[in-house]
Length: 195
Image (cartoon, rainbow, N blue to C red):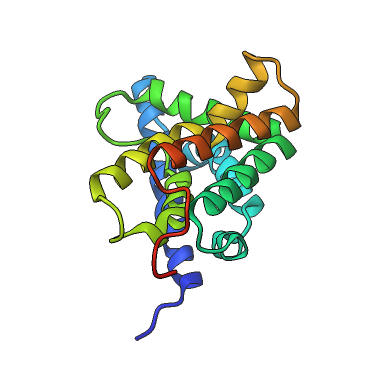
């Protein structure tokens, strides 16, 4: 039996919905309340809506990197620009997403080893770095992936906007500069041999 990516996505969404409702019910119990399914669903709805809206606003990562070509620097620049533009285009949505995940962290600190977010940015970064797999040192590639996670995403946009007072264009440019500087530092500025 062949499972399509769409079917797999629906299954994953059902699991996330169920998990969100269970987490919301647990939060209500910790508040010494007896939750009904409706109460738990209502509490979970806020974070689920943020999640669904974030999914709906994301472009196809495959299309994005294929347009950039096989050069690592160009691919990293493409994902960094797109992520920054996406956040800047709907800042309130992404600020709400950050708030919802922070609320979840404060509500349940029982297992701090489990990430409270899916880490979509890592999927984007992995796709951008894909041509380098097997062609460069795996440890260095992992280190670059981790460093890029600090530059690509919602939080760096908010830091540049809130702390540095940058406008949208300057924010995008600062993030692209930082991301491509990391690629250059890792020695991946040129297209990998054989591409």
